Length: 244
Image (cartoon, rainbow, N blue to C red; front, side):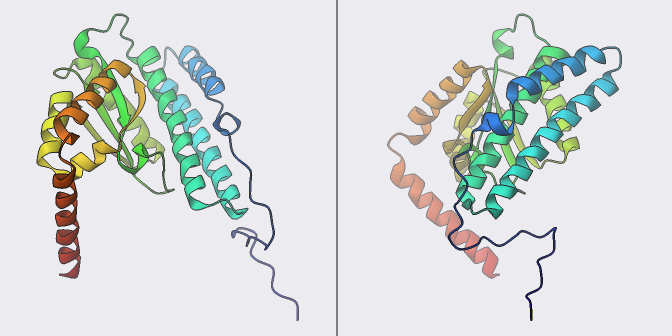
């Protein structure tokens, strides 16, 4: 009796001896330059209709994400390992977020001469900060500023977050000054762990480098044993809660 054929919409099993997919290049998956050109066209073609302008931009970004996910799934079914797949998904997300940020600050809320208070860095934290992203994971991002919040920065962040939510992403986000990052990291081991895995995405790199320097100096240096002890205590408390 012949074996039943697997359903066409189900992942096909990897045959023994089948070669695994080779290395990937993000430019072959999401062409960031082409995406930005398309977003610029969307902004110019719909300049008099903000609703249509936004819809077209989100359609383009969603399509880039969808293509990336489909390629990641195909590679996984062909034998790519999980870490490679998570890295690919993270890189696709980087391109999509970067394109959205450029669209927002160039075409929607352009600051021709940003003040010191308007300088902002967007940082990946947590697992996303490590450059790995599971298909259904939250996208954890940190908006870092030097000083108090400005109306421009608030508008940029609000526009981006609503866009990402409308695309269907689960976004974990926070908006803090560098001083707040340091203070909260000292008080909360979960926040400290998240920022420990930080990675610059886009925006003002000098702000990110200032955060990195302050974090290393004021939070990390000489506190390794304290951090390990805090993580062990956090683990024990979590396990006790799960047991209850």
